[in-house]
Length: 139
Image (cartoon, rainbow, N blue to C red; front, top):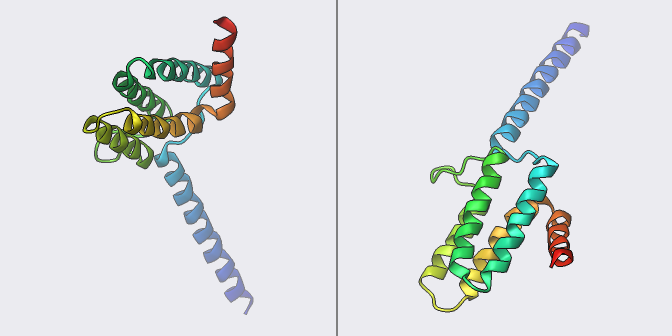
């Protein structure tokens, strides 16, 4: 009976190690590691400039937002090719595509909100607000 218990413990330990390994591999593949603080601040400032440009040229701001988000995702280790595009980017790009066929800025505003969610996740809302407040102090 003692050897059966030992065998069960060994099997459970092996299964646990395999599960931990799979979780670690999935976490690496998802590519959502944190950005260095200087990158967060740089991206937050870039985002603020893109937001400010939205008033004068919404379509250019949406294009710039897409480029910024791609850069953020690549730095975080995500794959951004068409086959394995992260769900968040796919959602933002779909909103941007819809804005191309519509008049007015409402669809582009929606696309910007989708991009902003990605930026907020990467740089943190506090960093984005800091960039906004820093811009006000300079102006």
